[in-house]
Image (cartoon, rainbow, N blue to C red; front, side, top):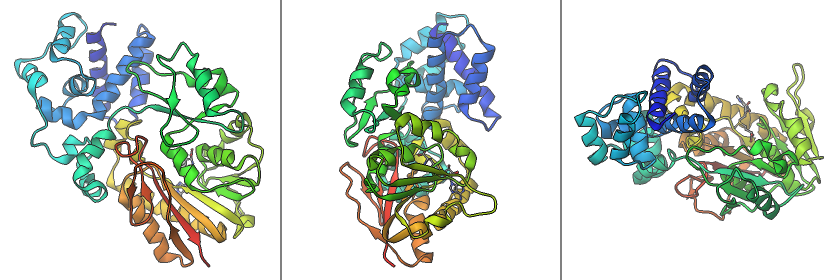
Amino acid sequence: MRHGARQQAAIEILSTLENQRRPASDAVKDWMLSHRFAGSKDRAEIGDLVFGALRWKQSSAWRMGADDPRAWVWGALRWGFGREAEWIEQSCYDDPHAPPPPTEAERAALSGATLDGAPAHVRGDYPEWLDASFARAFGDARAEEGAALAVPASLDLRANTLKSDRDRVIAALGESPKLNEPPSPTPYASNGVRIPWAQGRTFPWATEQSFVKGWFEVQDEGSQLAALLSGAEPGMQVADVCAGGGGKTLALAALMQNKGQIFAHDVDGRRLAPLKERLDRAGVRNAQIRAPMRTKDALEDLRERMDVVFVDAPCTGSGTWRRSPDSKWRLRPNALLKRRDEQQQALAMAAPLVKPGGRLMYVTCSVLPEENEDAVAAFLGSYAGFAPVGLTLDAPHYVRTIGVQMTPLKTGCDGFYVAALQRTA
Ligand SMILES: C[S@@+](CC[C@H](N)C(=O)[O-])C[C@H]1O[C@@H](n2cnc3c(N)ncnc32)[C@H](O)[C@@H]1O
């Protein structure tokens, strides 16, 4: 396929999404299945175009003066991926399968449109209904913060110190012919490895020998820093009560060096399914998976015994919009309300497990104050015996009334919020 045909494919995929509330990745997959002639390079570039269109949808619509898939795709090409207006126009003339060439108005927009006078939610490509939340979180920097949440993200890995170390992971991956350049250390997390985003390329990390041997896990640097901030150490008793697929469990277990005990639980037992295999591959020997039980509290015997209880709370995921740009447009106010309820339930489940003097960690991959410092304040309002603890984060971040906030703009990782509470009574 030539560039024009790829643009047309992206426009078609985005048009089908217009009437359906489903993940863009599903629509891309469906299109690929029904267009078997598309090669791997086509697939990668069409995927980038679809996601790019969604990343910068509002700012593209503003600049192009039209809010439709054609405007979003060309907006992404022009201002997201930096293609010249002439290149875009020429790609339409070169190819019978391309979209009709730009009109006079479109040509003028592609060569000279700006975001002058656009409101913050348009400049920052985030939903208008979240403007008050973004203003609370970031004030005048909200458009810039939103824009940084729209840019494609690097692939971050965590070297697993139970089996390897960062230098060995970098050396092993550096030999891969599938990478343009060797990976580098992430700037703040001690075991982080970063593979920069490259247009039209996805790195098939799961087939790397070093992955199969358990040398690394895929984990954003912000998530690694959240685990480090917990203070989990060898010999401790730790409960990860929102363990899901176990990204944090694995990071916490590595910090514990197989000494002490880590308990992984989730209210949804199905989410724990991949964990056993992941723990085995990573060489973790001190983890117990505690699936929920129908008639009994699966965590009953852990009450008041834990040094650290980690709540990686269910949230909107607004801090990960770089990785799933369509989710920002699918998010609705009632989903935020639901997540806020779940956050209080998760904290209520976690609190009784903390021993006196122990720590309750509350973490989200969100930038919205409602599910971050507000959630912690609401918990503190109804539970006596916990007090916020200051956190030392050696990376640029926002300090909140309680806890710390990392963002792509400030910290260079996904938007993670972390708070630590100590049990005082
Ligand atoms: C952010 S995800 C966890 C991700 C995981 N810790 C990781 O690092 O891979 C949040 C988890 O909280 C769980 N959870 C806990 N309490 C919940 C509640 N009351 N309602 C919904 N989900 C809840 C969800 O099932 C989900 O697996």
